[in-house]
Image 1 (cartoon, rainbow, N blue to C red):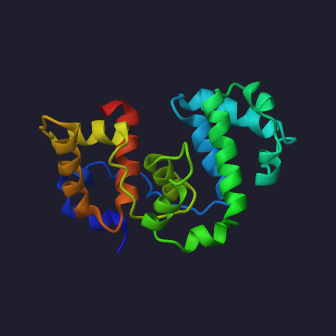
Image 2: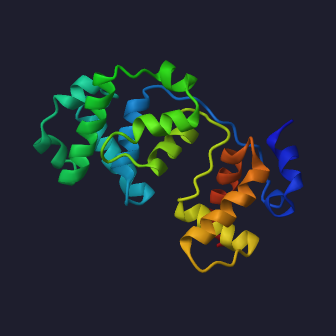
Image 3: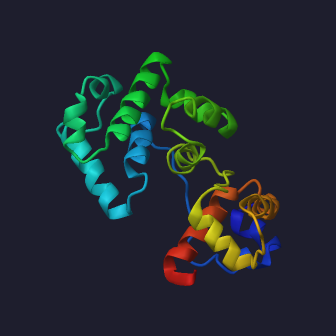
Length: 200
């Protein structure tokens, strides 16, 4: 069953299924993808892209090994526009992947919950960051980013969710999302697209 057919049981979500279906892909060099996610935190997409390109330029416009990142001085990373805390987080990721000998193949084979448990041990890496990695780099189909502001705004608007606390909102969102399993990632992609197109 395709996810579009599956979503027909949700009358509101099914109204967003316009255009070609999304296709998730596994991407290589997960550690660099995670660093890119850290670099983009609290930045708009355009600025985040500029910072990431500056980061790659430090390594002759190629994706570095984690040993190269570890060997990159703090001051060098500061010069491309990173705060001290982000420099620390980038180094934390590189050290963690080296120390634990983490490979793409290993991460591909793990369940989402296990990946979140593993990578949130890194200081500076939160659940949301790993969820983005699961969706956009590891190709998992059933990830729901309940803490994502864009998803929250889209669902409040689409489902007319009434709530008094953030906890109540998230509880209601999670209940709605259960209907989407095992394709929650695709639902998030359509909600983001709908919001980005000016619906919210």
